[in-house]
Image 1: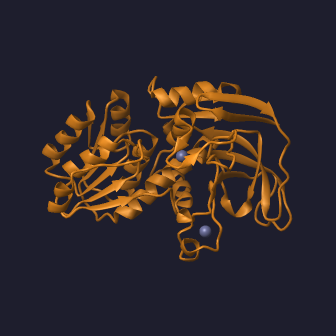
Image 2 (image 1 turned 120 degrees about the horizontal axis):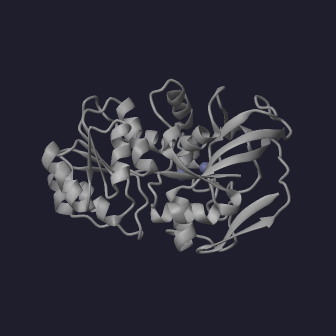
Length: 341
Ligand SMILES: [Zn+2]
Ligand SMILES: [Zn+2]
């Protein structure tokens, strides 16, 4: 089968590899589509996220739409021909967070496209059947792949423990910011402000239910949200920068929650402690997602959210490099680039 590996930052190469054999409880998937996520871009660009470092050539990709082509021993409930979305994290089931119901916090998790676990940018992959969620009829592979960023958005909103009518700010309107936006709408948010330096992302946010979208320099835009809203009750940091964390703390209202969804780069985060303390802020960091893929599918089915339009660009497996670079440069109005495998 054809597979694309990252050998070093910026160095992706296609090669021929053996088709995996599904073990007990696993299915063999024919990968159809892979979304390019900001975390893939981190590995492509810097070769690492924090202390997770690409030391061996790695297959990227964890936002997956696929089709079951074979089942390993002991699999029930899935059969060849089923189309599925994929939960990309395989937790150990034995550690303390796993036993307490937090598989997303499992330190031994095997996560697609995170060193040393190969991801989905290849024609076939073997994966536990329990982590493959059957798609309802009519749901596309595009939507299946977008359930992954959407699940992160849903989980971030879960962690915010939102009450109906609260004022919400979302800093950054990429795939994750727009997923948070849609999940916040479903959770009954009041007015929602979104900021982004890119005009087309702001227009996107308005189409997906934001009340106000402020385009421009991130700091100025964030301060404008503070002035217009009088201080949001919940601020979601979805820009993945240190400055955005600082800005989120600066604009949050009294007793507000600041939810850090992005992966700040570099790995150390700084904000003004006295500002956070005087407002009695709660800071929450988001680790991937938990119990949210099923809701993403259900809400897309009944029209509460729109997964389809998050996909703005389409590439072939041979063009994986172009897809990664487009996502890195945020050029041409890209929200999510997908790679058809
Ligand atoms: Zn992702
Ligand atoms: Zn575990």
